[in-house]
Length: 337
Image (cartoon, rainbow, N blue to C red):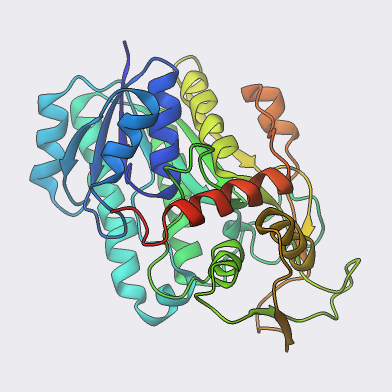
């Protein structure tokens, strides 16, 4: 049985990926500092998958802690989720983001190299594309970033590509996510943002459960079918399954690959809102606001490479995503405790 270290494994995407790993027959070891998650997630993973992962409460900046994990476990591959992830916050405290997401990741890569563990799946982001010239977005499009969070993703990609060039034994997959939403169908795992959510669906969920009064729609004069921004929303379980395919690929293919994970479809803000209304069974109030600076009209993925290399394709539609999000919201009004 292969052992996979999952950094940030109690987080939103990490926890769903751990479930899929266990169900696929892998042994999972989680490293997380619980900065943006709860230790109770481990019990939720066990409820769904039947096994509680081995857990280390360790920070990426703790070099000795990282070395101990590799010394105590024969790890075969790493899936690296751990990192700060709020775009707005990254603009306010850029040095904190660079220290954690870059210096911390370098500590991880060094610990891997010292232990001879050279297979890695990295959690990147479509933010590395900045404002694309056209859609759908392919992996060979130019990259440029507009905030420190995106810059840390792109810098990690560059570092890992250089590592692969220097040592052909490394196998690295850089997975560029689009917009993960939804929750596990069991209602046990889902997204629990701190404070007022920045992302669309968690915000709609707070409107649906009465925590927030209305949804703010930033602009309705874009050149899109209904005037609101269009994005590629992907179910978090589809995304998690993409990581399983990526790990499988890494074991047989050295080198570095950049791969989009999205549905290949774009949904507008109002389309997502109406799908959520269907899920919760009532109309939800919203107000049209002025455009936000920096927002783009549309963004969705070309998924041909993921299908060709990984044999992976998203299965869930927007109705599934909203239904599962609402189920988690209803079942966990106070989050995961």
